[in-house]
Image (cartoon, rainbow, N blue to C red):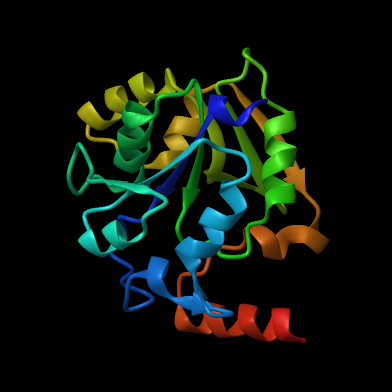
Length: 194
């Protein structure tokens, strides 16, 4: 899969109520969460889009910020917006709270792309990760249909798409952990420093 066939979409539109501040700008090892994600995506994609209303993301020159097409409708609307603006048939969709994601994990996903599968998504310990996934462009139609019915749950999207699931071994689970609270942030910093 060539870089020009893939777009990176980072969802950074959440309210971050449990964290108390925008998760994308929290730092680990002198880089923000979003900078870590951009670093992992960059070797694999030709363009990175950040879906967010926050104009502070405009300071990141290597990416393009796009506000949600459908406001206040959660990550499902973020996926829809990203796929709508993606110029490629396949797009990574990553939440902004997974700062330990690495290029090796993303390459595993790319290796599993098949035209017959709408989405390639990760699973860890039996839990699906629809916000660490590769979606085909046409999935935006399903997103829009769900949104117009008032649905907001991303898991509903997973239920209606043809998925390829990649199980991540527990030993590698830290690379895909999402960090939502100050306690989770402290735990992951302690883990990577020990």
